[in-house]
Length: 377
Image (cartoon, rainbow, N blue to C red; front, side, top):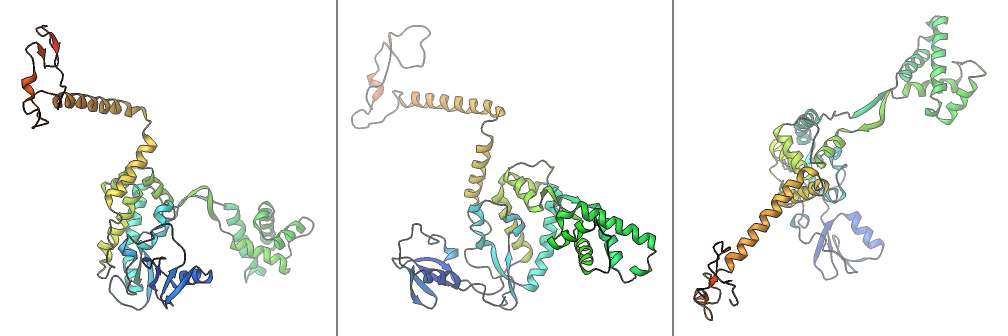
């Protein structure tokens, strides 16, 4: 990188309290709109009352970050490493992507290359468990373009003049047929040439016609189809639904039940385990934010999606019945004459029970005239 990874500029609120850290570009944005005043070369103070608290309650974002490799500590040849790869994070919700700077750490090229080997192994493991090919799923093979591209390459080759005339004519017909069928894939100038082929023959000496052949050679034979899904989209979609259609291992089952936050924590722990960083910033932990909060969100998302399922009706009935019975017996126990609530005014509530009053739940023999009820604490 030609500039420092962290510029450690400071933004203060209107009261002078630290709001967040920012880059020089962000400071210039506020100053160009006359929204802040300059305190020093690396500090500005906002002129308006901000709505939120910024990062004031998150110490990780308020500290001065060191421009050094978090693994070995060197300051040379740094690059920004995505702890959670972008191919997964780009398919996550906005509230998760807004905290992406937490998972951007400076790493030197040597340490980055060493760790990427382990990261590739983890991606292949996810590929196997979630049946998510690394190159994606849903590719379409355009065999006619591949055949025409090879024919065009042969006609443009150095030894095209040595090809027998019958074979050259066959190659021309192949190129013309595919070009006319796929005319929308060509540039505007190439389309005009292809339209002219209907009245005249393909002329290899023409620069315009050679341009059509070159475009045909450069076309991709394998392209994403209408149902194409990338590797990251498949994995994130599976863990976001908190269910997988594949038989996964115990480690990936934890990701499925924990949702997207569990996938983020898994990548952070993988980085710590295999990169072995010795110079991580303060307050950087793999479980940020706390696992309890993340799994609460995952559980809430699961319940909102599946609360109406008919299989859960017996569970709902059992829970409601159990809570009702417990509440009833708790109220009966608290109203029992043996429970003392007011030691000053009613230290012996059992003395207020008359001989003809029943204190039990039922009186099947009818020996009591009325049911006792507690009228004081």
